[in-house]
Image (cartoon, rainbow, N blue to C red; front, side, top):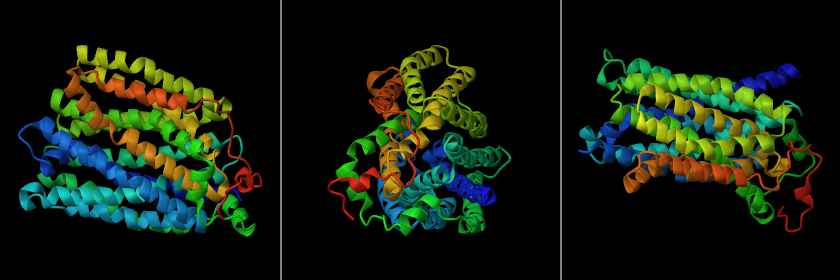
Length: 430
């Protein structure tokens, strides 16, 4: 049984790594793609256009969460994860061969945005399905560290992307070298697809299926009976996704436009920060299993509130590579505290027949509101206020939202399948 669970976890993580490799390539290559697909005389304008396209792609992620969440709660976690991986590779491949603005004009950014919409639609079901599967395969007392492996897999995928980006952005590489990581990601996704076929269905879903407790309209039930839990899920995501996108997207533009670093050096720095996060996630997941998850999230989110503005102020008064990396590292520690404790806690909000939908829908909306918009909002805040430290205001806001999501919340793990309070609630739609 342990061997079977180990294979399931490995298959989930390999697939998640590749899915996030595909999805995060755009994020980490944004500062390279912006002049190629959104050319403008002013580099800030070019960056704004690219960040707008980056944020717009996330609008469709909640729709993907609804579709794959419904599919995963109705027909199984395994099937949903399999199909999300199949289709995720196609837009990545298209980006790798897509002509630039200079070659086909306005069609280039339009097609690029379409690819981003497609990527986010499929990733809307991937991350939630992987988290649900990991939590349902793990035992009480280890759910934090097992759930944190999702972020380890995602970060490994993103780290691989930036490492390849660092290699193919070297001066001796051709100008089209940035395309190779996209093509490699698509090809490897097709090769590793077989691992998803080996995933077993989770025991919790099998019990729900055999007991006849599967719901025809899980999202409708959530909107009727668990609106507070959905809002908590959205708000709790703010403490992780906002710092993450500030660290890896907004800061890349600081490196490029303020410190005038070459592209491959920016990739190398981001790879270092990702490696740091890779070590933090399982540590925070382990600590969440040993201590109170709710208090851990509160402490981490309040750290974001307290330290964000002083960190930005210090960085901008003495702008240097070292100070920027220090800011990135401290934000990563705080956000890792949120994500390390939030996985099992969010899963505990929902019973088995609607857990996939609840996480996929709630978290996707949170990512779209607080994560994808972070670089764009931060850039506009600087323009509107004239204060280079203004992005910290957005982080403070997100930290407060995350802390408020834990109000009147008790520390808990996902309940055993047999305890299904939602099935006894009035108004349940079967």
